[in-house]
Amino acid sequence: MTSPREELLPTTRRALLHRVATAQAEGRAPSLVASVLRDGELVWTEGRTCVEGHAPDENVQYRIGSITKTFTAVLVMRLRDEGALDLSDPLEKHLPGTAAGDVTIAELLAHTSGLAAETPGEWWERTPGSQRPELGDVLGEQPFKHPNGRRFHYSNPGYTLLGSLIEALRGDSWEAVLRREILEPLGLDRTSAQPQAPHAGGWAVHPWADVMMPEPSEDLGLMAPAGQLWSTTEDLARFAAFLLEGDDRVLSADSVREMRAPASPLPPGDWDVTYGLGTQLIRGEGRTFVGHGGSLPGFMAGLWASAEDGLVAVTLTNCTSGPAVTALALDLLKIVAEAEPRIPEAWRPLPELDGALLELAGPWYWGTSTFVLRPRAEGALELSPLTGWGRGSWFRPNGDGAWAGLDGYFAGEALRAVRRPDGSVSHLDLGSFFFTREPYEAGTPVPGGVDPEGWRGLPL
Image (cartoon, rainbow, N blue to C red; front, side, top):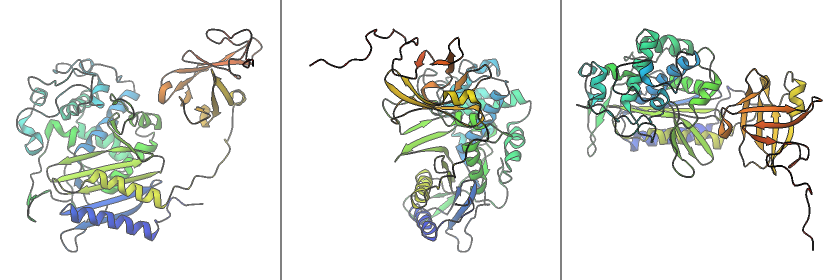
């Protein structure tokens, strides 16, 4: 059986090295560092630099820009789970007096608030936060570019509002809350609002000549929740692993799963790129990747994970433009996933199973479509189409004898087992859909009734 600490194969390591070295050379990056985490363990790190003998490792800080937003989103979800707010609440309920009081917290998290992408005035990323001392300075006189809730429009001021919301409800600074509620519990000791040695300096590389100049590094003030943080590949890899599995000290597995689900209006048909609650989502080549990109003058960052492969890749560089860090991180994930496919855990029976759940196990029919209901750990149920196509969902018990849908079409819907007077199960009721043991089973309350002549062939 494969151990989680098993090292990557030499051929895989060389393929990763080649991809990172190519990205640094062709992207003309002063330095670049990348790490891969597999099944919770950091298994590979490589740094490249233009300075001989000073290649960065997994402990060197870089500025991570908008990956900061995912940390901010986790703090908001913690407040939701504690009952301090609901995602459908208007901002005004908890942070009165802003020019964006009608937008909901969910809309701010998912960038569907309609707020402007940037602040008014000089570019906030290259100017000190002291130029925007109040939320009014961040939002300006005309903060909206679109009707709220109608479309995805990335908004940095939106995450400033979320940071101020956190401060209002916690009675403490965003930075202090972040450290107390995320960084310390997860052991992210090398993630901070201000740079801590060893850290990289930010550079601008001339687009047509092999020369460079330093970029300013500003304290972003109120905009900090949108992009202030510095971190390392090791810390970010561990944070991404948390986004896949959850940690009850910070946020449950169910809540991080909710963050990873699409929350923005999707384009017609299938989607390739969308946004969750503080996370970016990319789908391609049969995989779904979750994470976030980030940039500030002098820095670019990518944090991406594949839950099905148990893999995380982090890429950090210290130039304003150059290497495509998100594409690089996705390539690193694909290299490992394809060269060393994840070996499944050994099958093990459940430690215990309620007999009432076992009674529900097996095939069910929604009309003529076949579904299978499987009991899972801790009283959960998984409903899946037998053919691989259809509306499947996971359900967890909600305490009143029913189960609540966790994902997909049936998210939030109630699943109930309806019993006959003798106690046997008649059918399943799922959001008004009736699932029966036989297709259009006679004697069960099939909506619209069952033809009294039953099934028949076509006479010759």
